[in-house]
Structure formats: C-alpha cells, structure tokens
Image (cartoon, rainbow, N blue to C red; front, side, top):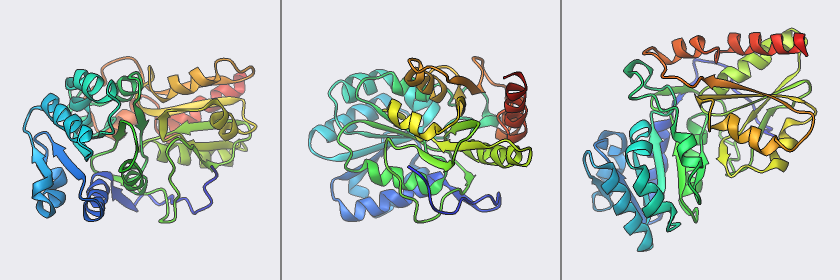
Length: 320
C-alpha cells in the first residue's frame, strides 16, 4: 500500500504511543460495552479508562500469568479484553499462558506490550524488549503488529477491537517522532510504502522507522535511491506484499528495534528465501544483551541510527 499523505520529518513533532493507546481504549469503551482492560501493576498507563469504566477494569498486580488467564476467560465469554504491561515482562513471564490459554484456544485477546524495543534503554537488559516479537510470532494463531508512531499505534488498537484472533501490539513508552498525518489508512497485514524503491529498499517498523526515513534522505543526496517500507505487521506476512513493496530493489535492508534473530529481518528473509536475486541485510540488535544506555546511544552503538544505516548501505553498494 502506497502512503499518499505527507511524511513528517520534523523531529520536534512528537506523540506518545502509550497516550494514543489510552485514547483508543476510551473511544472503544464508549462505543462497545464488551471492551475490558486488564493490567499488571501498570494502572497509571491506562488510568483514563479505569476512571471512566471502573467496572470493566482490573489491575491484577504483579501477576501477569493470571491476567492472561482472566483475559482468556473474558474472551471465551464474548468480551473484548485488552491486557497490557511492560513488553519485556509480559511476553516472557506469561508466555505459557499466552500460548495455552489464548493462542491454543484461538480466542481474541488483545495483548499490548509497552516499552517495546529499547524504550527503557537506561534500565538495562531486564527491561529491553528485543525478544518479544520473535516469541510472539513463533506461536500459532498469533498476529504481531509493531507500530511506528502514536497515530499508527492508535489505529492498530482500534483495528484490534473486533479482530477475530489473538493479536500482539508492541508500542513504545514515551514520546516518539510523529510520522503519519491524520488521514493515514492503517490496515493489518499491509506494508506501507513511504518512499518507492529503486536500488535499495529499507524495511523497518517501530520507532526506528524514523531513522530509516532520515537515512533515505541522506542517501538521496548521494544519488542513491533507497525506498522505505513500514512493515508494521510482522505476522502474518505474505510473499506477494513484500515483493510488491520492494519494487525494483534487489538489496533489502531490514531495520528493527529487536534482536536480528526471529524478528522482522528473519520474517522477511523467510518469505524471500525461495526467490532468486535478493540480497537481505539485517540491521538491529545483534544476538547479545545490550548495555545500559539511552535509546539514541544504543542506536548509535549498533549502527541503527541514520548515519550507521547510510554507512552500511554505502559499503554494500561499493562491494556489490
């Protein structure tokens, strides 16, 4: 899908994915009495919904596994439960219940992990969420969506309300650069072409998509036409949509705020593995525990910032 709106490149125009999530919940709660919200010791993050609809909200405390089980029961009763807490904790601590109670029974629980990727960079590896996408996409019946900005996060949550099967939406935690305009048409499963590809196609999602856009601009100044595609849905992912999004490019660079194993890069490589002529380069967190540092510092450390992306693509083109 080609995005026809204006891409914001002003880094001072910010939006909070978590606030957008709360706004979407409030809208959903006002139109659907079946929307319930559960959280695990993160009540402040969904306080507006809790205040507006206290009979449809519960903070279960530090009991993530119990929260998942309760949500599965609500879904089996015809309700539309959202569960949310810190992504790094939710997807690992409650993985068994997500697999058995939610996905095995294929009930439409909406799982929202906040603080995704390196959002909590200064809190270290215990709070870095760079395995969650890989875990989620490995479980049958699970859909995995990784929004890039606040508008996309809100639209993803709204799209999830009536989604018929389990869905994991991974969002940031603070202010992220706003990319899309209000008229952005989000659709689960459909990659969004932000810049058409010629020589190179950068496929990215999450907050790091802003670095891909900046890198594309920098490469254009060097005479290199690098397209940018937002692959917000990591699962399911169709070969046809990825090939269409790549356009004429035969060099595909994936960029993700995740371990380079099992996430976006792996998913793209899997769908293109039977195609001839593509070279796939994966950028992200290497298979290691990232050190303590700000998000920006860690981007630079692993060459996930725009300068690092440009350097990597330039070196590839020189050796191509």
